[in-house]
Length: 97
Image (cartoon, rainbow, N blue to C red; front, top):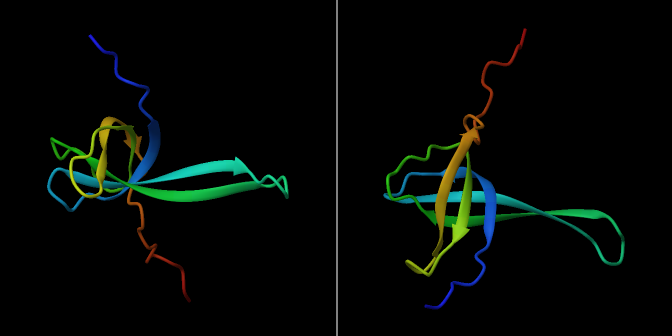
């Protein structure tokens, strides 16, 4: 019996869950720049499979790599860690007098 290879695991925030059984997760990757020795932050979006449609916008989730399910879907939601609230909510209750 063959063993599966090592699968990547990422953590991110759900930014869209409007599609059926699919969610878009935005993850953050930090690394040191080779030349300038500064910390660089890159944001990446992953399309992930959510078979039970449990995710809501703003949830913090763990995703793992799987075989391609469609043109862009190559990740599966493994665990919902918690909620960050509405991801891109605008604060309309500002104090203007």
